Length: 120
Image 1 (cartoon, rainbow, N blue to C red):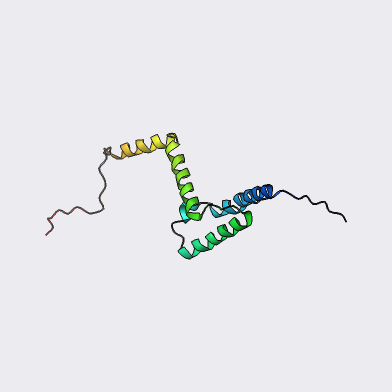
Image 2 (image 1 turned 90 degrees about the vertical axis):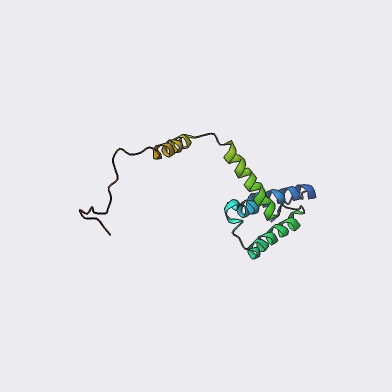
């Protein structure tokens, strides 16, 4: 059988490989990186860095290191938190904090029994 193969220029191949790396490998590597990166051992970080270095060699472009990806994710998460508009839950939690300061009209029941004689 005859198979038609298309030869792509080197630049297009490099861009294609980089897109595949970013969509498949980097997305898996950076999933929830803000929570697990600080708890990961140096040995595990070096193994993950080897994957990134191999991808750099394959794609022909230097890829961001794991620490850079972590910093970017933290900054992105911080921006999302600071730009989040107040929600009904926020006002409800403020109400609950204010309500906790209000004294109850009913006295608390104590578990100790009252004695008719003084205790030593």
